[in-house]
Length: 300
Image (cartoon, rainbow, N blue to C red; front, side):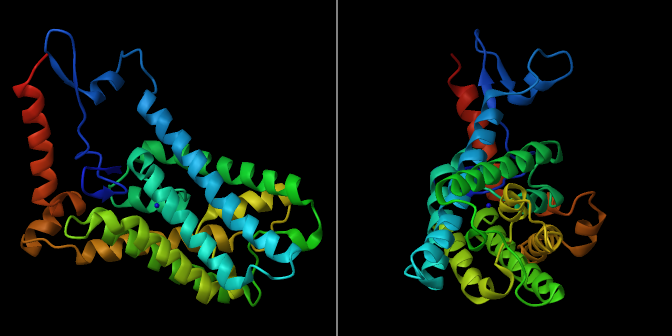
């Protein structure tokens, strides 16, 4: 659901803006991407491994807490209640965003990762690694829950339509659109109050689960649905929870990009190769320049 700066939660910053400067011995300044250039001995960086581990743990705890509330509600005869389940999902997302957003961007969702990539705010070459890691986290969490609570039929915590498949597809598309629209607003726009990003995203999850959970299951996340499906070997209507969230998040991300502020004329925007490159904020560019200046001013 990027990096966290000192005052601003940016869940997925464009790669061309995320310039990392390293200082070698002797005071020479190099960019991090130089280590991944042809002929370099580094095929994968430690920071990227840390991001993958963060996505694995974040997705694990998100699925474990949310799905555990579903199973416990069944075992304890509805004591948690449906509203309580919704609150758990919202709270766990909020907690994990604040805990890991500064490390990996706190996606925890392949659909979110893909949506950011289509907008140029996440590198396509890292999408497969993120998606596989997120799915693995969901599978591990689902396996843990099955070991803890058993494999009774009514303990299944996956997502299945309670009405028609088309009804669930439309609902999943809408709530995924809604989720990504909100994420884009609070995490990629410098005019938003970045410190509240985790709270807003968590509240959005809670809201979506409340009004759509009893119909479609409110997945909004292919990994969340695929994990339990794989562990339980139950794939009924699983395509709904793969296609709808991806389509919804991509449309939601681009819908907000259309609303993003720019003072450039339409002719200049449409002439540029990438829409998002033409509407990057001045503040982001200024931050990169300031960071470079600090490194060059105080060489080791």
